[in-house]
Image 1 (cartoon, rainbow, N blue to C red):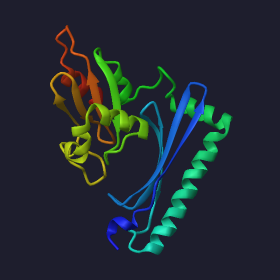
Image 2 (cartoon, helix red, strand yellow; image 1 turned 180 degrees about the vertical axis):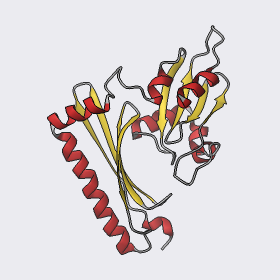
Image 3 (cartoon, helix red, strand yellow; image 1 turned 90 degrees about the vertical axis):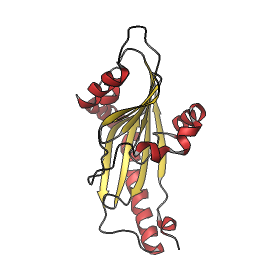
Length: 207
C-alpha cells in the first residue's frame, strides 16, 4: 500500500451556543514528529490546541487503525468537555476570544484600516472549516489549486512553524502573512489614505 493509504481519517465537529460558534478539528500529522492534534477555532481563529505525541510513524494498516482509535477518543473527549455549557463558558472566558476580545495576531490584522476579511489557514494549507474553504476557493480558485506552493514562500522550520513574513499576492487587494504558527490570507479594500498594508500587516504579526 502507498504511504498515503496509512494516513488516519481526521474528524471535524461544530458547537453553536447563541452567537458563539466553535469548530473542533482533530487530525494526524507526521511532521515534524508524529502527533494527533485537536484544534479549536472560533471566527477563523485558533483558540486552543490539544496535542498527543506518538511514539513512531505509521507503517502498517494495523498502526493506522490503532491511531484512528486514539484520534477518535481525543476528539470526542474535547467535544464532550465543550458540550458542557459551564465548561464552555469557562473556556471562552479564559481564552478571551469572544467577539471584540483578545489580542491575537488575527485581531490586530482585522483592526487595520482597510482590511475587509481575514482567512485563517494552518501551516499545512487547511482552512478552519469547509465553509470558509469553499468561500475562499470561490473567490480565488487558482490560488486554491496551488495552496502549498504559495505557502512555501514562507519555508517550513524544523519545529513545524513557518518563517514569518508578508507577501502581496494581488496588488493592494490580497496578502498572505505568516506569524510562524499559522498563516492568513488578508483581503483589503484599497485605501485613500496611502496606507501601506504590507507594513501594517508586518507590524501586526511581529508585535
